[in-house]
Structure formats: structure tokens, C-alpha cells
Amino acid sequence: MLIKIRKSWHLSESDATPEAVFKNRRTFLKGTAAALAAPVAGALVSPARAGWEPGVKLPGVVKSKYTVDEPSTPFKDVASYNNFYEFGTGKDDPVKNAKDFVTKPWTVEIAGEAANTGTFDVDDLIRPHQLEERIYRHRCVETWSMIVPWVGVPLGDIIKRLEPTSKAKYVAFETLYDPERMPGQKRRVLQWPYVEGLRMDEAMHPLTLMTVGVYGEVMPPQNGAPVRLIVPWKYGFKGIKSIVKITFTEDEPPTSWNRSAPHEYGFYANVNPDVAHPRWSQAKERLIGEFFKRPTLMFNGYAQEVAGLYTGMDLAKYY
Ligand SMILES: Nc1nc2c(c(=O)[nH]1)N[C@H]1C(S)=C(S)[C@@H](COP(=O)(O)O)O[C@H]1N2
Ligand SMILES: [Mo]
Image 1 (cartoon, rainbow, N blue to C red):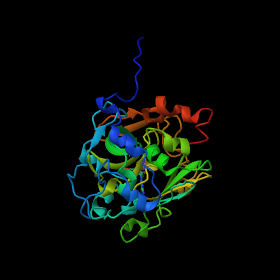
Image 2 (image 1 turned 180 degrees about the horizontal axis):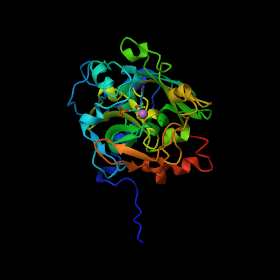
Image 3 (image 1 turned 135 degrees about the vertical axis):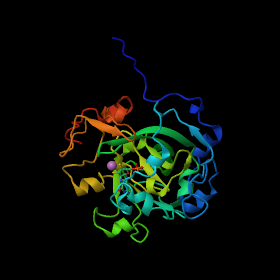
Image 4 (image 1 turned 135 degrees about the horizontal axis):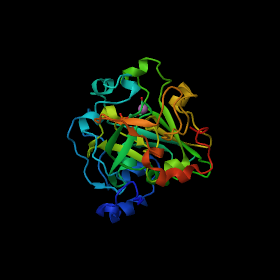
């Protein structure tokens, strides 16, 4: 039998890093003032007006080699079938209730074990880096999945500029807490704010994306505007939305779903068809728009790239 082995993404002609961006990666940031002086390479990631509107293209996006060879789930599904409990627990609540969510101005606080801590405008964190379009598999623990053309920059590139200390073993993330703007936070369905975390090597992995758009456009609020995390080999709940704080820590940080149901959701949350959720199997998934279920792939199809991060770990124990 002939087995065709290939990477889960295709090489594209725009693989090379443009020179201007490379130079800007060397830009040293110290607090907001210096951040404002950073040369502009990428684009504004938040829209000029306060609320989101459709059709606002992010300029200067290049296609990434980290792209799966599958047609993307239509925009209307990506932007209307969401989990974002800050705007309600129904799948169609976020698109309705986040419609007028104002994401400008937006700052992200950098804290903990790093040289460059402080409060940054989101544009100043993202702009020095090249925006890339990456078509990723996106798998919710509830067993639905999508193929999504995200736009973002590698989290690892941002982290390098922030210069974490040798004590930084984990990266913790926090969503905005503002029950007036996020009415779902008036109900205690989760402990607010939503928090997530990654081990430092996971955060530095080239597939881990700080994501600011979808389908070439500014991120719709229901998808986590203005900036959310995407870790394509993990269940969707690791992809924390509307991030306002990033903290470098020595110890494993708490995560929202682990806090809520520790026997059901672990810190790692790697997609794994062999480890069932206590209440349902993870062996199959339904790609939104398809009728028949597909088998779920180990590490969501990214095993070749990320399995090495977990060598020697019992994945049934560290679920
Ligand atoms: N702050 C926050 N982030 C969140 C969630 C949430 O409720 N609040 N839901 C998570 C879950 S369970 C999934 S599957 C994805 C869904 O992201 P999508 O709307 O882009 O598909 O967002 C994740 N990020
Ligand atoms: Mo999810």
C-alpha cells in the first residue's frame, strides 16, 4: 500500500518574511510611550469607528504556509454559530448580543515575569508584525468543527519582544470583565473573567496565533474582537476571546473550564479522539455544513507539528 505523507499545510510563495517586518521585529518596546514610537509595518487591527461593521479589510495580509488544504466554512457560519458565554450561552446569542460591542480603544496589560511589562494599545502589540492568513481546523469540545481562515500574528513573535524572564514557565490570558458591555457576565454560568493559559513552549509554537481577523476582515465581536487566541491542536475553549491581560507566570495558571468542571476539562485540552469526555465520545466530529460525521484526528490533525511537545506525557492523565 502506498501511503502519501505530507505536512498538514502547503508551502506558499509568500513564505518569506518581508524585510521591513523583519527589521521591525527587532524593535524594542518598553511601555506605551516607546510602543507608540514603533514603526508601522502591519495594519490597525481595530476598526476606525467604535462598533464593528462588515467588509472592513485588514491591509497587508500575506498567506501563510500554515494552511490546511480544505475549503473554508462559509463566513456566515463562522460568524453566527459561536461560543462566547459573555454574550449568552446559546450558539446564536453572541452574534445578536455582541453586535454593538465597542472594541476601540482597547488595551492589553502585560504583567508578570517579563522585562517589558505595561499597558499597550492592541494595535501597538500587533502592528510591528506581519499579518498572516492561516486556514486552520477549529474543533469544539462539543464535537462540531469548522475550517477557518484566521488572520493574525504568531504569539511567539510578540512574546519575544516582551522578553520573558527565565522564571516564565506559563502564559496566562484574561478576557475583559465588564458586565455592562458583556451582559452574559451578569449570570454566574462561569467564574468571570474567563481565563486561559498555555505552557511557554505551547505559547511559543509557530502554530499558536494571536488572532485579529477572519476572512481577511477585522474580527467580528462575536468571534472575539479585537484580539483572541487560536491554538489549532487544542479544543476551541483554549481560544480565549477579547483578551485584556497577558501574564507570564512561574506556575500553571487556572483556566475557566477546568475550574468549572475539573474532571471534564483539563489544562491541556489537546484534541484527542482516544480520550473521551466523561459524557460523550471525542472520536468523531461534525464539520459545520456537512451531514456525515468525520473521524477526529489526533491533535486535530497537527500531530506531526506538535506531538513532540508532549513526549513522555500520559495524555489520558494530562487531558
Ligand atoms: N472569553 C471567552 N472565550 C471563549 C469562549 C467563551 O465563552 N468566552 N468560548 C470558547 C469556546 S468553547 C469555543 S469552541 C471558541 C469558539 O470560538 P468561535 O466563536 O470563534 O468559533 O471560543 C472559545 N473562547
Ligand atoms: Mo467549545
